[in-house]
Figure (spheres, rainbow, N blue to C red):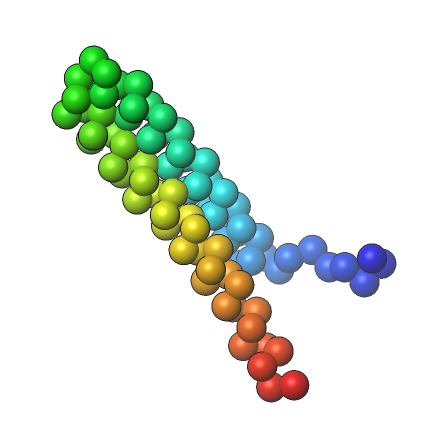
Length: 75
């Protein structure tokens, strides 16, 4: 454990954006579901972009996992 290094600056920024997108997207979906009970078009207008944000965050998790794979593939 003593050899563990904190993530480099670009990876740390990517890491924070991943979680901002995922949690922000889930929050927007929940707000869309709640608002959809009163005003259906407003609910859809909030929920769909929320899903897009959350899916973007999940895709970025995959991208982050592939970024480190290129360094170790030459071993």
